[in-house]
Amino acid sequence: MSRTVYLNGDYLPEAEAKVSIFDRGFLMADGVYEVTSVLGGKLIDFAGHAARLERSLSELDMRSPIGTGALLEVHRELVRLNDIDEGMIYLQITRGAPDDRDFVYPPEDTPPTIVLFTQNKPGLADSPAAKRGMKVISIPDERWGRRDIKTVQLLYPSMGKMMAKAAGKDDAWMVEDGAVTEGTSNNAYIVKDNTIITRNLGNEILHGITRAAVLRFAREAQMQVEERGFTIKEAQAADEAFITSASTFVMPVVEIDDATLGDGTPGPVARRLREIYLDESRKAAV
Image (cartoon, rainbow, N blue to C red; front, side):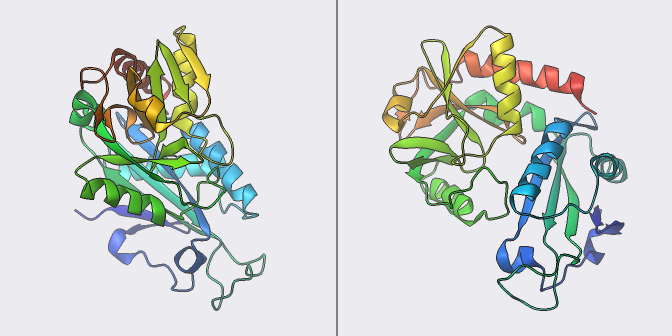
């Protein structure tokens, strides 16, 4: 069955949704995006995603074509129209489609392009990967410097996913100046002596919405949290590891560059944080 998508104010069958070849998202990767998960037909962490979207737009001097309240209603309507119980909603806003290609930003009155579509993912919260854990490799971090802005410049993360696939693994952790920054589409964590360690916020990593929630829940559960960089060698010697993202929630990592962590199964901290996150997020879902 064809999905209903949202494009510039209209709900359309996906086959009828068209974007100009001059759109700057297509030509320049001049756009930002967000992905919000849906559990039980409700939106997870919507307020956080909306706030980060506004920050990303502001950092790029890009105006929003829609207010937060209206954006929430679009999300809810897409969930309804596409009968999504578990899945995701992808949102992208670009600087729009001027009359021709130019490196210079188009006139300020150029309408932004806004696109939203759903992805139906039954069983999203009960992923088999969460029970077996992920295996990751390390790769150099060769992205641009403003990773705190959630732009559509995703070529290198895509390359990283393919490097991991070619190695027979699940994902890649990126390394810069000797320390792990983050995963290709997620924030990275290790656990050592009951302390959760993850990269501190800065321009080097995405300010994950799931990251913020998980760290808050961890502290509320009296878990120790340390925000700092760590090396791959330190990660390989950790008791356990995990990642967080809007689509994976809390996902255990059991192997890093062929080094098995612990007994090779998901650790207790990651398992407990996943349980807490899913429980609390469902309660707060809108």
